[in-house]
Length: 115
Image (cartoon, rainbow, N blue to C red; front, side, top):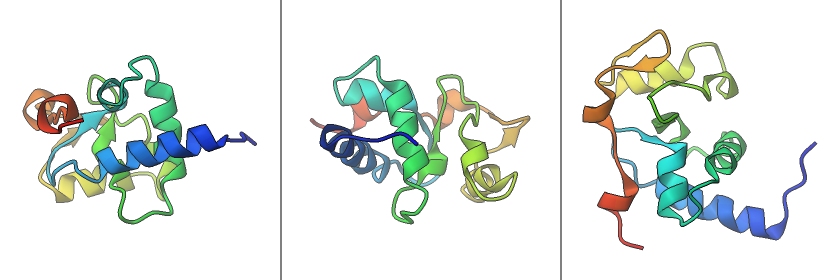
């Protein structure tokens, strides 16, 4: 079991605040969130935060994918296709675990949010 420090918990909260602002029908990447938070090399830590968020309904973790639009976090959702279903319910087409027209759906917090 991974133990998280207070520093990690604080970082996770910052990640959640960004993720809560991803608009319906848009996606972002772990790395984009990390860069926005000033920790560009911490995409994996953003992934850990997303994994820990699945009990929080207000955090739309399904909108966070990898840098090329793959649903790399899908195995952390209940059922085999829940992440894909949630994205498709928002009008995002997913084929073979890949967001289609990724650039159109991509939401960059560094361009959309102020620090």
